[in-house]
Image (cartoon, rainbow, N blue to C red; front, side):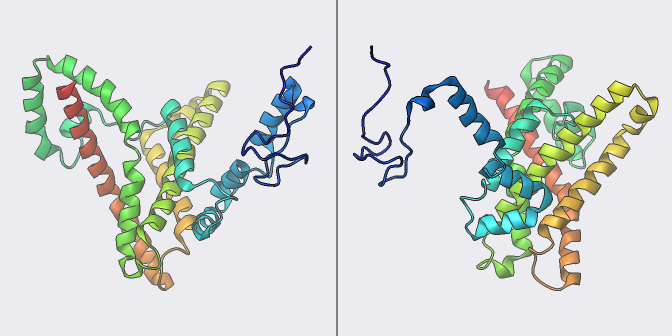
Length: 287
């Protein structure tokens, strides 16, 4: 009775005829009867996920503990050793999409109307859009807030692009040695850390701890002011480790560029929120 398994000596990947354990043409391993068992399937899965030598583990280890080394080695060509920064960013973005403990990038209609530096310029425009929509202000606000929450996560890819562009401007004199793509890779790593660790995993674990011990003290610490301070300290600390050897110049020059980066972060966020406003209002008008 046939087992239904392939017993041909032809390589499954490239078609090379051979009798070796590995294809001499492409390196594909030849399967045996044992490879078609449930045990083999589970072993293959666990080795890909948990093997300490695999690419994902090496990448995450460097991402957390040696981000500057991860960025520089990947840029120099260590592509088999590490997952690309943009893939790490996509993974972090997906994690944040499902576990947005701090919904930092969501900007409600009320905040857009009165809570931002540009609100005085956009207030009348927003009010006119509400009038033209034919909806009551309450219904418009409900629809806007639900939609902008989704769009805010979908367009997060713009944030590392903005950061990469501005760090490139800070080093525009070295644009041949450090082209824009290099700056984008560093920015993807920085924003991935923000999404994966700073505003999702750590605050999520903190909330679980506060719920588990039911401590009023822990919940009292969980205030907007403390959250803002925590976010700024953690992301700036990580960014320092990541960028400290990236910028050219003396220690004073590097420090100055780091200060400029921090000062630029606020207008970058406001620009992101303006784009979010336009996209949300545009989507509501079109659909």
